[in-house]
Length: 559
Image (tube, rainbow, N blue to C red; front, side):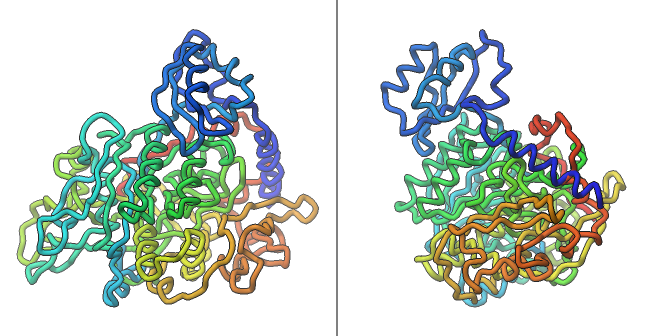
């Protein structure tokens, strides 16, 4: 228990150290002055041609305009960075960092099947899938028609908009697959998405290996905002991420998702798959990836359905990244949803299909009297990537039901309606290695609870303020971690949105909203995981968060 409090002090000391960085991100400070770097420069206002010319005069080349974050992507000599830092119009400079995909009973587990019975299917709502592309599939067509529900396609990387990786197509199926290729008397199971009649906007940013860059993701977000009214884009799904390098207030990827949120688009982001990572001595805590660390967005962790349609036996996936967020200590994830061994659409001849044939679904699994041959329509994947579209689909249903809802109202309603019934802890075993992992069901592991689509559709509460995820703070006098009150957020202001209602009565112990420590339910009873998060031990690795991986494509489920 003492180590719990030691890490408390350490975590917040680290946060203060990062609170006032220079205009240059830490991962750009040691570049060879003669080297060319691809950098994203954020300005105080949308850069003019004069600003672009200043960079060109220093040997830079404009690669893409990122007006949505008042910035641009340039290729320029590292020697020019110091001069740029002296420009009073420059706010912050970062590398164009790599991002990666955050790699069936999911629909019944979140009560999506009940929603469909009452006609909530996402009709009229546009969902932008910023991912590895979407390959045309019968389950993504208008019923009894050859017309695709993918209403717009654009690639921000070389190549077409088809999915060469088998990630974006899988995501699209969880979001909006209508089960066309598994419907009929010969099928024993139908694989249907949460919002099976929603429109899809295919914005490809990841290559055949599931890799991309900050700049392409930002361009795609910028495009989604510009197309919002044309295709009624109300939701953006980001099943991708990368390590956190600086505060979300400076991170260009976070600034882009905030711009979409302010434009009236619900942004749903994967938490990351680093929940088993103990390389920093945190037992997987503080591993939320960017832009899931941003307090505006809905950040999603992954649950396991345990192979049943009922919710009662579901458990957290041990690989699901846990909060609080690195540097800013934002309470994340916001919500959890099924993400383990989820069956969805197959992009034929994709990289994952060829590399992981064991994830192919046998025809006998869902077809009467069929052989054990593999399906050419469906594939199985695990990760917070798969949990994210569950929540994006639920958001689409809420917006179909009430188009006037704001992103904050959607987020608040989903979190309030989420199920709060969990065990105190659970143990999972990796089937490949035999290693077991213990998970605690605290606020930084399961957030506000388990997605319940039907409960959210039956909730009529309307938040009147922001739904920014709160910040966790450490009180050295009492030895507790508590949620910082924020007058700009709805949490705690009204009895309808009290902390204990949103995150569950078992999470908070005092009027000061303690969530950890001697007076909180997760205090002395907790011997694993969080007890190392708040230590005083200094470690250089905390200044090098790039050591964390943002993608585990080999995750294929756990016991």
